[in-house]
Image 1 (tube, rainbow, N blue to C red):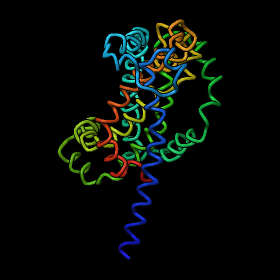
Image 2 (tube, helix red, strand yellow):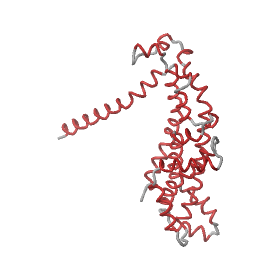
Image 3 (cartoon, rainbow, N blue to C red):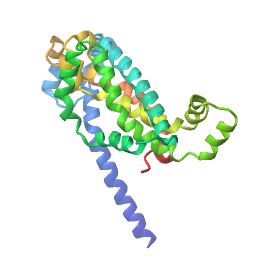
Image 4 (cartoon, rainbow, N blue to C red):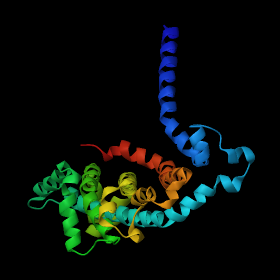
Length: 282
């Protein structure tokens, strides 16, 4: 019986390792070919970079230097927009959810259901009306055309998560705070926020990822390269003179993933803790 179980475990691990290997093939191909010239790519799909064999480090990392010169302003734009958006969504969403969770006013349930109903509307359906609105407001080709819609669009999911978490907090905590003379703002800042670090990390990570990976909205609203984000910048690189050398594009793709890899390394633990702490409970 033990042999059979061990055999099944070995088979399962072999299948998982095979799937993992197949998943990593594109990433290995990307990194490897970011160090290879067009001549090398034309003669061998996979292969060790000649610069590595010759230990010509300057030539080996030239594609990364060229790609970074183009990506640097796009990366700065994206980091700025992602930071402001994440803070805006987290701040406004947590305050709104706190009001919905702890205060009973006429129509509060109806208003909350109206907020949740927006989750059923596909974002692509609002693309044209949103574009016409920001155009009429004169927000095109600016940071605000990205920040304001992102904050508005991220509120629904954030309010849902925060309210679900706040509903699970003991009411005795708030009663004790009120008896000690704590105002509504004090309860929010000194009581709710310190207890909500895990769900805050969930909202922050999901919003940063969404902002970083968003492609269509930045592309159609910002024709000025000064305000473009990294996803639209990568698309534009494909038709620039830099794309003559394929290694430049591969290097740009690798560089653009580094901030998200860093976020993954540092935010995985609090993010998973937020998922298991009741952030997604119904």
